View: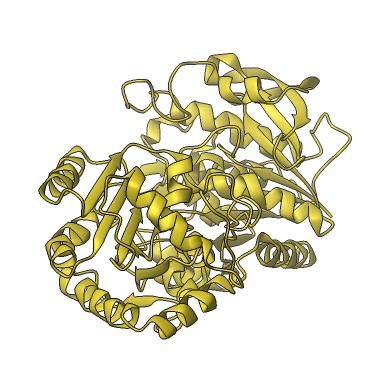
Length: 474
């Protein structure tokens, strides 16, 4: 089976969030189970610099605004997945990130930039493709490729499309007067089409026109059919629930493996966990905490935003410290929250520490050195850090939402609280500290979490089944 995987970011080439992690792993996992999966990416400067074997293979015409672009072919340096790169310097060769400039402002022509990506994907999946290789399934991801199922539909192509929502909060909303500029017919600006509360939504287009819809955990697939997590799309998603499936993301089991992690100060595993104590002591030293073996050490790695529940953590921080615990936090985000986190760390020298920013190596060491891991997100489509934590023996404390609910088992592998409030979080912390005081019970919980299997193979098999189902329906 042949599948074209369309994405706006993928590790190790370019990353702003979890979409890049999925895009960097899932195509390779699909190839390992026999799917001829290839990836289409925009030609950002970072991508062109990182892929060393790019060669021109075709010229794409018929793009929005009458644009013409070169299609380059190469290989992902991480997974070996074949890549198609849309080389359009006017759209992608600019300073800043994929979506924002150096000042953190959205590129003003984002609608056109990602309409190019979507239209290119539709062309490659249609009889108009200049390539001999042609996909049997078009797999689109998030709003940046949301117009591809619409374009494919308008072209009358018979190839089925699948739309994966990684986070429904990002919807690609633009003014309706852009329809003509994006080569969209006027009649599609309708509730039965791309219209979304008077605007044009790329994500709405994908959700309406794609043959199959997926999101990144079973619980999130249910949550987005209702308010508030439906973000205005709940009606459409509920009417298409027979086409909507939640498939849990996986993790890179080679990169996140405490028995071979080069970022750690000691190796350890489920069967030989003693190295974790060395990692905890090393993390305490690195972060300026008192090197106290019996102090329960809580870790947190997250965007410092309201969605991630950082305010809840700050509300219980005094109580944690009063109970003799330690707290390490890593992340960046809202400036007011960053400031509050710094203040908290300054109030408790030797007991609390923070790193404002992002450091990949430090994130591995926090997972390895922490006894417990806080993840109180108000909503979380899938989440990866709770899975890293389970693998590294850092018992997670999570809010019962999305993928957190699907991956952490209360009292068995972690602790789950029902309401996104400081009180509910604190009750979970109390349960965790009570269990931590029982060394035998704590070791059993750690080992149960480390035994969980969240490899990408399970996810890939789920997507392969949906590909076959979409082909059969067509």
